[in-house]
Length: 551
Image: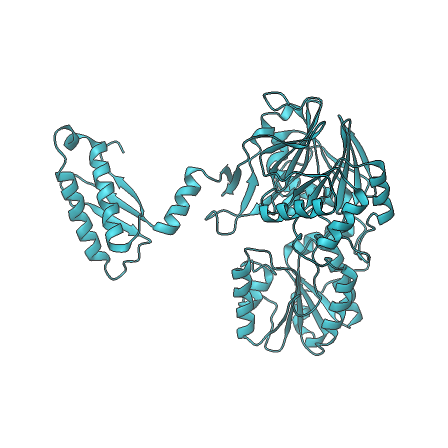
């Protein structure tokens, strides 16, 4: 590797996102002076960045080397793997590669961003499609996951083969798609695998993730036993196999299907356009659904993660055309994503308060994960027999655990890396060579800015500590606004004392400081902040305005 991090006669791996965290997957492979990107995802901010919804990996490293970037290969259509495409693909200016279902969803994103036709989007055959991109020969290897057309990538290079799993599981009854068989995976292992770059999400799960076929049977039984009740099922919109199951459940239990949620509408449309859900029942509209006998409707709704604007939250708050009453049933056919517990609990409490029955995957097998448990990881290790294991797609605890698991299964070497670590896979002993910048960006309103930039940092401080505005007008007592301080009953006394403190602090200035607007400004700011700390135990952001002076 050259000093400017250009790959030489070697095979490098670099994660800019998705290593040390779950989500925001962006992976780079370097070889013979060129780079190949695998996935370009994003994540949701939760409460970490106030006022921000979307978080992206900072692509500065590869943007500075975009002339050496050959393309972006997408493994599947989950947002943490494709969500950043419409925000960065145009700037990177390289071709995209994806199987038909993923390509269709990406094309719609590009169209919404006004980029359709400006970004080259190549559709690859779904079953073992092959592409040659510079020194990289890439073959799509279908694997089961909780979305249509989940794929691993078999990446051949002059220095060895990489099996990049993407998100995956083993499923003998996947409902949708035909995953690569054990025999085929063993054959890949027989041909030799240098490195396995592998999903770590469920490494602590001692059991297999389970089959979509088993979920099909459990959902059928669960809906059937609530005869005469209105049943709502919430699930991940992208899980086409689950949508297929719910269509069959509706038909076989004699219920009309009603769909609530734009993301569900979009996925159903894209799936049908690509040959899936061919027998999916035609949904009825909201008015028709509400006019049917309670036991003759099955509602499919978004919002299983507690999203406040999603259909389920609005139904729970009785702010939606679809209604549930005491005795009706909500089935949570989805897992609880870490960080969403409070939001989900709020929705579930609202449902419980109205006497609505809830069933989750803890009470019934109405959901299985799309990621491998330990037995599945161990099986894949034994089939592929890689020389090197590189855990990705997990927090540090997940990746270290998978490294230990791999070594216990006789994988000779495991490299635990983080975002920004450049890892040499071959030739020679695999290991980390260097670390480059791998930060985060956020979509703040309509602008992409650094996650640690002044605007977001200031907003976070204001959210925790509040803000004060002090106006110093010549010949008048300071005007003070205090926002977010817990002083409702004492606010008048607080402001009067703070005014006195500010005047005293300014009055202590001597000589040129007394005439220096900057010195006056700082004296007022510190006095106001000390008063807030004394009264409220808070250290708010203080803004001092001095009409007629330079602030």
